Length: 225
Image 1 (tube, helix red, strand yellow):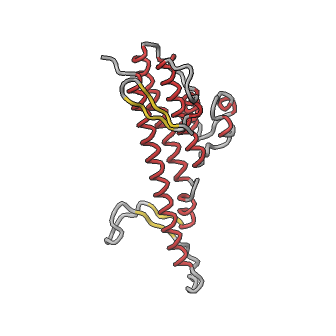
Image 2 (cartoon, rainbow, N blue to C red):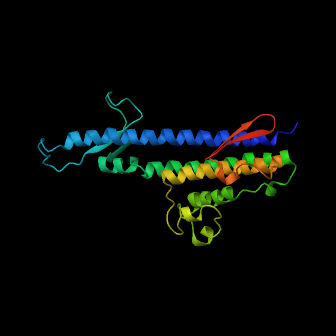
Image 3 (cartoon, rainbow, N blue to C red):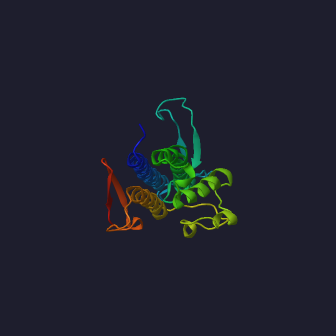
């Protein structure tokens, strides 16, 4: 028996929400690392202590093993200020994570969800269209094949996210941008549901949706802004 269209949409929305949760947890982890190391650097470098005569830099060492045990293998030794930069809001750790989410969101949509939606609807895959996912395709290509840079010709093809990114500049996704991206994906899921249900007049339009909850029985509920 064919899958229900709304069940597939629900699965993708659940997947998106999982990425939201993981993203928020990761930010909390980066913030925790930042605060812990910042306090340690302040303690080590406070003025009351005699400066190190050899000009040694304060470093952070990380290991998969228990750091209290002897002869452990250090996986990374990095200057504390570099570590703080990486874990700061919008830093390189956050940017690597958000890029991975973009790739993950698009790949699951393109390879898993979109073909199943087409089968459930009885249409060719190319008739399941989404402007936001088309833009995510361009971002994914830039991340994986162009060192994170959206070239000018590719930037012109962005239909939804053009104002969020600059051409020929490495992709940088802020917290606000990431929230906006999650909302846009859910709005398009809402649009697909409206189309599938044949809803032409509704209390709100898909672009006013800020979250979506799909119920069994062919009905969907949306959260107003």
